[in-house]
Length: 109
Length: 113
Image (cartoon, rainbow over all chains, first blue to last red; front, side, top):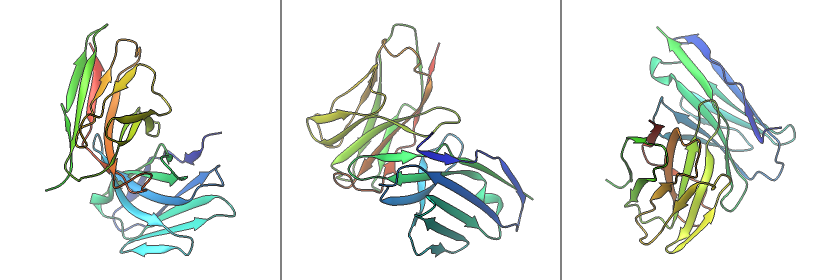
């Protein structure tokens, strides 16, 4: 079983739609959780950290469920510019950072 | 502007050839990393370095070598022993040992001729 599993998509949604991604992880020792965004053939960029209490940054909301070992990302009012691959990332301490394979999102006009 | 610079953006390797990917950072970060990304897969750690003149193997170090002679620089050599080198290579740095937030360079696409 992979340490981090994401639905690869692609998710095709119209502008203005709400879309949600889930990510499950197997390492219960995971300490920190993140969502990164990666555009095609570009470097990943930190989108937001994920906290147990849930957190929001504008149109983006992240949730963590430690008991069920999954994290989620909700994007409201999708924009064309949101089209990208979203990476679920875990940090288990020290130098161990685990990247999911990513979920591709296409937002259409 | 502070950041990480990778070069070249595209690189072609002939069979049996060693090639070196450059990574320079001016963020004054102690830790630097090399990742490999293949289509449909997550990033995989090749090597990392916590401090000058020290580096450690990651999950897929075979066929690669690194050096860390200066804090700012962490070049990666893809040797002829790496039989499947075609991939997107990403260099990253972090503020200190094990710090969570990674800053990435823009990547190098390596292909085999």
